[in-house]
Amino acid sequence: MSQSLHGRRVMAAAGANADDAEVWRWFSLLMQDRRVRWCQAHDRWFVTVDNRHVATEPSFDEAIRRAKERVQQQRSIERCLR
Image (cartoon, rainbow, N blue to C red; front, side):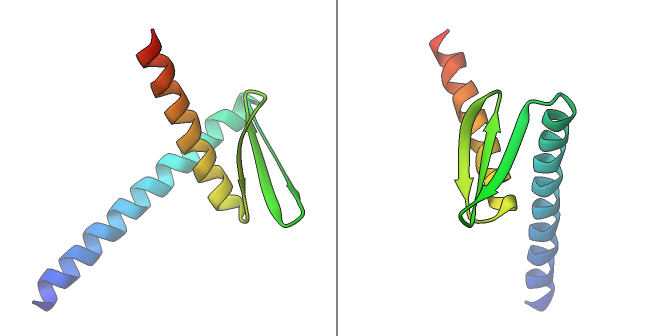
């Protein structure tokens, strides 16, 4: 049983690392193209992508993750409308 639990932990850690890498690659590409902006005000991080406000969260990490999620959702909706 402990090997099974250990295996699940290893798989979960690998999945989390892959998710982290994907988020920060996405952020880096946007930053390189100057498409993302952020600022902190009143204990919140505000993130804008392509001049559209997409996230407001208490931590920078959460704000970037939420921004990625919302941008991808918006792109999915736009693809469906075509």
